[in-house]
Length: 114
Length: 112
Image (tube, rainbow over all chains, first blue to last red; front, side, top):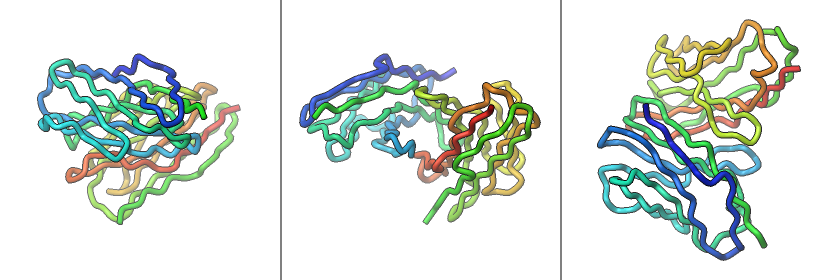
């Protein structure tokens, strides 16, 4: 069964600095999708970034980028120039195919220090 | 554009009472539908997912059930709530052409 692990329950970063959140997953599939979701205090789940496993190029979305290491089954999220609004729970997620369940990691709580 | 509606936003129910949470999606057809539960300060636990009408997959044995009576309607139910059913329930959907999940605004359920 697929599993997603986030080994950092809590992280903190100084405003304007860079932080990296870790995620590892377990799968025997070669094609799949990986996501990072953000859940601010409002609890609304917001998609941050998406990576397709067949693409070697790391996804980037403004200040957010990923380091996708397929062989190592690692999918870390880098937040550059951290802002106060980045404070939230961050969830890593895995999806095998379009018609299968999305599996979430336990989350990392990110605090941004002014 | 697609939208997802989930209600109610907040619900307080006594132990042993029934439950019905409803989720509907607009602007798409044949979506995959999901129910997740999030305990306070914890991650998301997948409860049920459905890839079509009448097709329900259960991930965690419990006293909850789900039904999909229509293509874009997903209902979470219980005949008798337990204290441990308290939590934040999120409905979500995704589709074949765009695999990212779209979430509803959630229901905070407190069982007293």
